Image 1 (cartoon, rainbow, N blue to C red):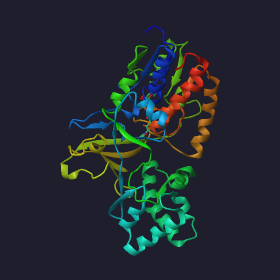
Image 2 (tube, rainbow, N blue to C red):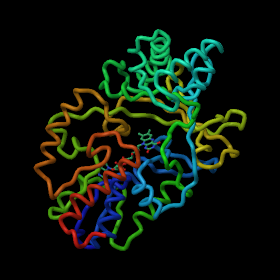
Image 3 (cartoon, rainbow, N blue to C red):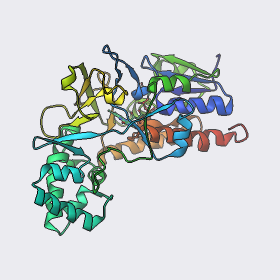
Image 4 (tube, rainbow, N blue to C red):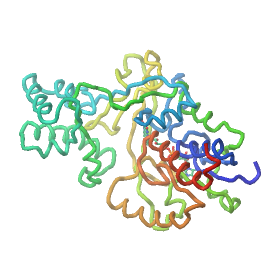
Length: 381
Ligand SMILES: Cc1cc2nc3c(=O)[nH]c(=O)nc-3n(C[C@H](O)[C@H](O)[C@H](O)COP(=O)(O)OP(=O)(O)OC[C@H]3O[C@@H](n4cnc5c(N)ncnc54)[C@H](O)[C@@H]3O)c2cc1C
């Protein structure tokens, strides 16, 4: 490929989906670059020495209510149904997370558990999800007790470890989202579509990017290429503050360290993930064999340690949801607006937003249809 029509910076979900759409839908030439030496962004998976497929950047479970996203991705992979289950260690008991009626039954004496469950069902209805914040504000003392118990035993400690911030220092929308599920459904997600790519995410990405109009260059940073590409249109899925050389300061991120370890069969977990809100330095352990479809194979436990983000040393994982970071983002969004039509920012780093994989995919499809193909409506599929 000589001079590509488009350069896509980042080969994660956002970049790969936009690249596929431009190549297949518009018939234009696309160069995808990534500074990592592999495709698939944070969804990258690879075989562990034990043979189990593991996720290098943390456990990734696909779940969505979006049929268009499900149908689109199903063109590039077959799926293996998978329902993720999480247990949280609370007062020495491993109980279902998100907290539900089974968690209540496991933690409290039978008569008290019945009373709390009945209070939940009669106030909200069976099957409903209630933010713990709402429970803590209830007039009924049983519901208020339960809200405070869950806040203190499940949410507060985990939040401190995860963000190194107290819950009141985070954007209130974070606490508002933590639910209690008035149900006996122990699945972590309730989405219509829940599955893992049959051959893994990296194989899915190989198919997404397998198009004669797409070329991929890995181990290449945008900074080293930008001067040579003055006329290409760009979809930038790297960090927006880095693109503008941190002109207004660095946007804060939280990082993580993952430690995978194959263990003896008796040390495997009964479910995909175990959370530790109050003990140890790690937040959770994932037994990757559940996610990889080999539940009877050798367990591979991945311990997850939250860390401060240090540019150039570790990865950016989560945007820090505070009022200060939202304010810092604004001048960058303004600068991005000035480049509209030539540089398109998207993805978890380009938008500085937490996206699940399906949301990243939906964002990429919308960007393609509403902004990229809209300029050439007759050419798009
Ligand atoms: C620990 C963890 C667990 C998660 N679990 C789930 C889950 O279970 N289910 C779910 O749906 N979602 C999950 N997610 C979210 C998922 O990772 C994101 O939805 C997805 O990564 C978004 O894709 P993206 O393309 O926007 O970003 P990324 O996957 O991060 O891709 C961006 C790419 O751009 C590259 N890049 C950046 N800057 C440059 C540059 N200057 N030059 C060249 N390349 C550059 C990066 O190397 C990266 O590969 C999880 C996220 C984390 C952090």
